[in-house]
Image 1 (cartoon, rainbow, N blue to C red):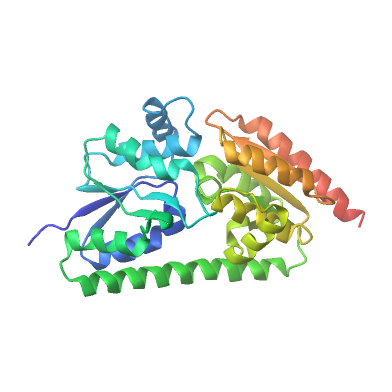
Image 2: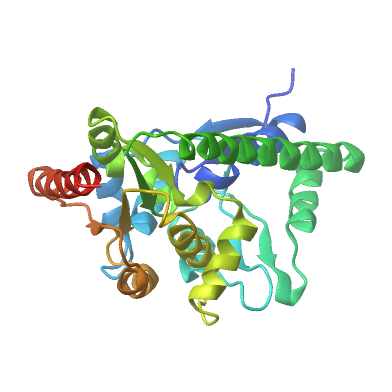
Length: 305
């Protein structure tokens, strides 16, 4: 029996946005997925050792996950994302990470390009990848569409679940952060657990309908450069009157977040806000002290009506 092609998936960056699509597509056309383990200190160290000092923490973590997969699979999936059209660019790490990985590792790299301005669309990239492993183009198309539908359904289920939380009378906070930061257990698990232990409901900035989020971001500024920043900032202004506090979580040294978050914080009125920057040496004790003070403030405001 012919061995299935093993495709490595680094547990970072777009993994938190597109994993269901990847899993449905590659398994449907007959491949096996190999996931890197959850982020840990060893993975961060591995990524840091092969990164330049100026790299942001998520990029270092991503390289650490690629290092963890190296020599363990036939291909490693590393998408290259440039833009989703004029005015909808993404951070340069999504555009450059493919070249970095390709130059650092000898493994075979599998990728698809998204650059709407140059006519490079996701569909074409998946077809190109798919026919490499399965010559039946109809099957390739079928599992791409199925993956998109399943990914969309999962995303909408999260949006609907958050809408229900929004209608509760419990204390609520909004966490404004990129998925690859807030959903990484090693980076933010202690923060999430603290709020849950305090019986506070958590809303996430990426679980608002993206079109709504972008419309609110455009009211904030029509010159925001990065699409994912628009989604985050738009969510903060949409939810500002519905939550007891807002937590901005970013990673060091994220240039776009450091600018955009600061501008948003200055415009957000009548709601407590805390800005937390995570790096690989963030002290837990100091962080917890800040969170405790923040929760004391929002509880006092709520008690005083």
